[in-house]
Image 1 (cartoon, rainbow, N blue to C red):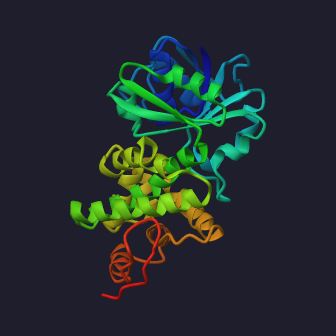
Image 2: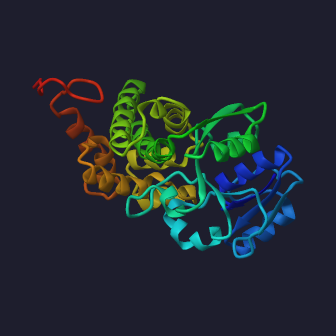
Length: 329
């Protein structure tokens, strides 16, 4: 196939490598002329994905000069800037949204591509591991089965198992919201807590994600699959995860700006956290953990204060729905 990947960060570069390794003609497009020139010369994205050379079938260019005749285009820019580059996608009929976030108004990103054959892509896919060919899985979601199958076929390989589903809303929300909970996992580790704490945080965080997703029309099984549990575990347990590293720095007492400066890349969980709180309020879903993380990143509360607040709350029945009254302990 002939494809284009919009966004030359670590994620877009990794996806280009996977597609190129499968023999497809790939055009990787970035916004910085200096960065694109360096990638073209060295055949490695030294800034964002060092040690991972591009296959011969991958070429580079500027986002202002996209190819016209492609089977589909991959959107891999940060969610917060998607609206700035949306015109680049105008010529394309088939768009795969691989960006894992929400727009500042709380919309899922696929809503920005009305009238196109659109898909959403997510899974436990840390960029560096994906680029190195370490076995993993992902899911492509689209309301159009033909579109999902085409995009799946492009990525599928012996080391990369790709599933399809029609639950596009669920896949997109799972991929975006797990970044918020991964911030929380990093905060927990930064505070010096153990795996018991993180296990509790991840399970209750997943419950919040699933409740919000189901209120928006997604299916529960999506959050229990590779786009939900799989991606959450990968990003909440690995130092390769930008969101985990930012969260850990916050737990260690550093400011948000310092944490972001140290990783030198976008941590999607930060803006997504604020958008998720807006979405939850709109759908009348309680997201106590997500809101606590939002208060930490906005410096309204210290991490340890947030822990005390969460642990001091009344205990409800465990699950996605509450059949019993509150039990005070």
